Image (cartoon, rainbow, N blue to C red):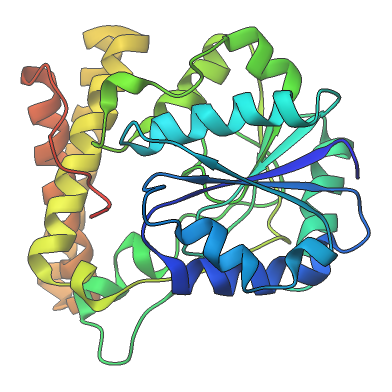
Amino acid sequence: MESVVIAVPTYRRPELLARLLRSLRHEVADTGVLLVLGDNDPDRGDAERVVDSSDLRDACEVACIPVRQPGVAEVRNALVRAATRLRPGWEWLVMLDDDGHVPPGWLTTITTAAREGGADVTAGPVLGDLPAGASRLAHNSLYAGRTRHPSGPVAMLNGAQNIVVRRRILERIGDPWFPTHLGRAGGEDHFFFRAVLDQGGTLAWCDEAPVTEPTPADRLTAGALLRRAYRSNLVGTQTDLAFHGPVLTSRRLAVDAGWLLRKTASAAVRRDRDGLAEALLGSASIAGRAAGFVRRTPPDASHTGC
């Protein structure tokens, strides 16, 4: 697997990063894989400290790179550049976030699917891990688990946690691969997937290679959940407008708004509390998408809460 680089952006999550690295230990041992960590707060030195306190360097080559410009897009771009600088012959870039952890056999499963499937980007599931006592709204949010698909080609992907990117599509898109204009707003992954498709690339799913992602309680309050739904869809609509223009984007919004009305009415009639929770989150999403038509700049704060 010397053609494989694993890239992880990290920002002030030493405990979660340590758990991720423990889960990766046996995945990367004696494989020739390069692991690159991009630390977005290098003055704290979390990445170096966590690696030094582990035995990961006994298993594979590890590099920690400082990224002083704030924002996950900046870190992801820096990680791609570092992959080429440190491993010029790499072919596959595996992206993880610092708040997940992987099961045994994950790396072989997802890289094999990427090689055999031939897609430019292959993704696996992100399974939610909610704390005890999480609300009904949380259990109906993306934190409970993102959309899954049967393994094979797909039209769109969920996010940059648990993806494998083929080098050729990154060369086709060109630097910067992730949009720096979004700053800390998030949504750089959705923009990247749109850019992949715009360049004639293909997307695929590997449902057999999950990553588990816990969610802290402060992200699961009603206000935090609704803000995330609003902000992420606002930014997503701005991206869709950039690639597809107002006509197609507004048509999709109208279809989804109609679905939401039907969903809400059905849940109310059946007194389906899960359905109503889903509809409430859907209402925040639709409101964000509508705002995306009007607002020309992304929100200042990250929709992920980072």
